[in-house]
Length: 279
Picture (cartoon, rainbow, N blue to C red):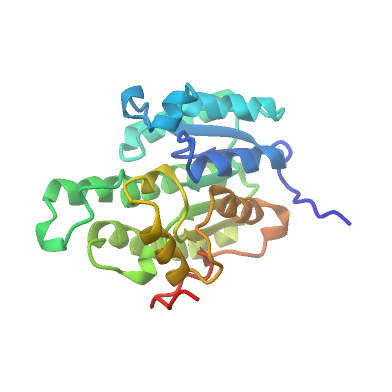
């Protein structure tokens, strides 16, 4: 007997940060399209010279390439360059979505600040770096949720918001002061919005990935050190994939997830806060 998620036909999903080839956003967008959604994709118009080598070799075109993949699945795609840290850009994104397709049913807040100069002790963080991470990760989630939840309320048909957080909000490891703080705050915002929007049949949940193989982790050396880290920390013995996250996101948006809200669900392969010895 097959099991099919329902509740996607005629629905519109918005996925932020969906343009990278090895990512979480792209698999989420594709999973929602496969389920039956039309999908709005946002990206930041990255300069091609900043693309990872595999994207350059594949002649990748960020959200345009993902849009092509969605159309090949038989669904509509609307790629839009948008800055989630800018409320005016978000207003324009919402206006574009409604002008093109007339509605929005699912919002996936996936966009995140680039990793790098924020991974240092708090006492060494620059004010500019702190604000950059806050503006994209936390403020962007707030701005997007506020604008698109209002639209869902006006439609009067319910909906779902899924915020992509991180295991970092639980681990609170050194050198993650800015990043982890945004994720802790996103978790709190999610719970509050779930309580506020529940009476309108709008569900709000967090999906918190652990270590996932994406281009954001290209700065972490592979080899024995990586393998030992995975063996030591992750009970299931492998890093996650974007698809691991996408499956849960699609479920939370589906009819089958209609009685789930205000939850923080870790998708981390059994990541342990204290390392164990490899066997």
